[in-house]
Image (cartoon, rainbow, N blue to C red; front, side):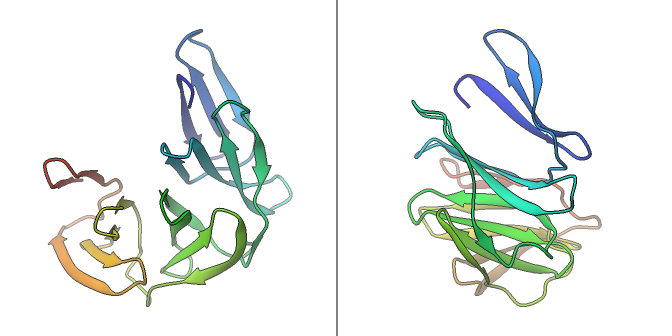
Length: 177
């Protein structure tokens, strides 16, 4: 963000690499799994577990004021967020919940976590296409896509191993894993 790179590092926190100075520093010192960036609104979201076991999502406005705030989210304390994506137009975060095998969503302003899917087989990585309002999700045996309400549109691919990363190229209409 702002000529830097944020990297989540389990058991270390979130590391910020500043491209101008070349310096890497620990940005948050808690366990982090998930990171989502909304380039349109200049906001980064980091899932974090504090040293006291409290789970939270931190939003960082990396525009001109670089504000950081902990989102007030109901229902996040017992879930294991694995991957997050941001929808900059509807201002929602979507995330995979590993311990419950579900997909959840919450607005940028916080509030209640809404479960939008039926149980999936170990949901993992996600990608979002805001043009078609489609979410792509990897799971234990492949990749599927669903709409913003959690309705399965179609399975896309099967795989012998779970894809741990998904990248969507909307210009060439390709999905990479």
